[in-house]
Image (tube, rainbow, N blue to C red; front, top):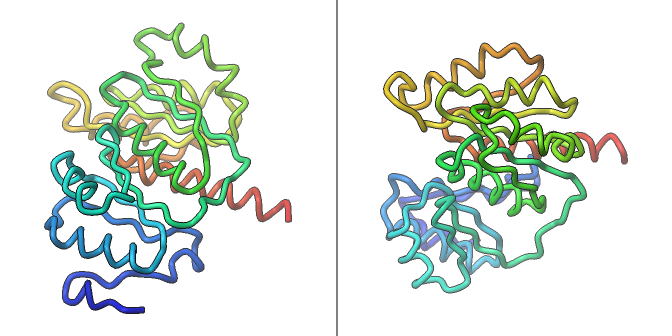
Length: 226
């Protein structure tokens, strides 16, 4: 592989997909635009797919203008470069967002799952401040193979969902909230100390990590069927 475009800035892990089923993903935050462009162009030349997270709109605009094949979504702050067919999976994923302010993190999870061949069903603004909103869709949520529940403030949504469904639940705390939310730490602690059994928790604002955890669950189910 020709890495001349990446000299002194990156060493792409081209074998990751074979080892664990995931493409290498670019975390854009903190990277110089020139470095991001060189990484994207290297992958473009190799004819491979690429996914990127934490990309600000101004950086996303530059990437799209420089590489028209690249798709950027400002809500989730993710980009993807698709050059090979995405492997569609039969798994069903439900993504819940407690409030509208939590949608960017939920969309990061949705776009990640989509990149790996899973189309998620969205249930947004179903937080426990209006419990009837969650209860009105809970039967549909129960039909999914996995649930990602995204919440800020006091972070109660995943615990409530965990008490209502049998399928795996992955909790995502967000930095949404006032004062003692402490940029998501309160939501994180609440999810870690929840009552509902067996709910997994990822890091604050980590929609990407939640989607990858769900994908591992789907892969394990598929492996057992073979």
